Image 1 (cartoon, rainbow, N blue to C red):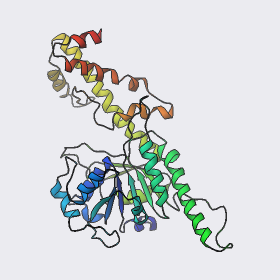
Image 2: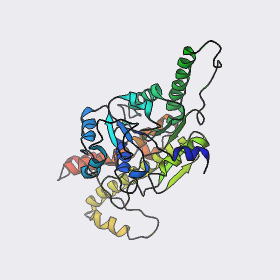
Image 3: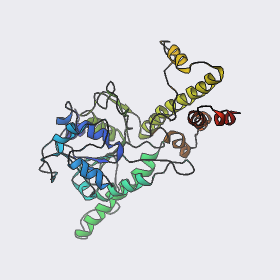
Image 4: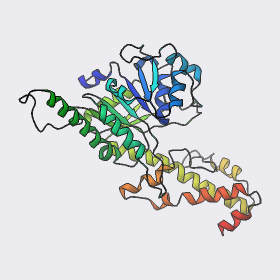
Length: 350
């Protein structure tokens, strides 16, 4: 084991931001992994969610409160340096970041009116982290986003944060202390990685713990540190060459799901025209043991983060025609479902 990895096998303080932070809370609430993580703190801008966590009440449907309560009750008010290793709390105060060794950013990345990624929440989170970043901190982005976000958007903020802290320190020292022109070096001064969240709420066969976790670091050292962290919480970590590769992996997963749901929606409408039971067709096709994966018709794209996939490709200038066309079958199915006699749907299809 390298010195870098062994350092991060020790206690880690984990910061959680926003809705995909259910992944981290589930890990903390897992009987098999709760002992692996040290005291953790979550930051959210919604005071009601912060209060719920601190009172041991889960607002995530697939994380029961009885698993969360033992981690929070009797540990509040929370003192990060003196709380039990299993303690978990939440706050709206970003200054707690000064005491965090690990920051996991999980914020929404919705689409704007032009169906481009809206990264306002990500920028706000990045600026807050940069304000309190310290040497040796590991920052991991988990939000679904376009390839290049981690290195092009988040990395400059964190580098500026480290440089700003150094400038403040130099200002407090004598004129001859500290060299001018110091630069922040990722992989040395701090660590940065991207690891897309993989959550299918309500499933019991594939959970956070046994679903492989893809991780891409900005440098080999960043990858090593991030891998060491996630190995404490999941059964298998899948390292890739860069954050961009990990970001693209997530978009491919989401796009695959959305495109196939769009396809089966078209088949459902066609089956209705022909008087064929689409469910019988799908079930029969699913008996093929290779070259087919079962998808069922429905008025959605397969999850809230899947909707970001189409637009997520645009900033890279590589939107795929099949991806741009995937929304039409979803919209047609909405008309089809809302009108049992299908007059609007049939007119829309003509």
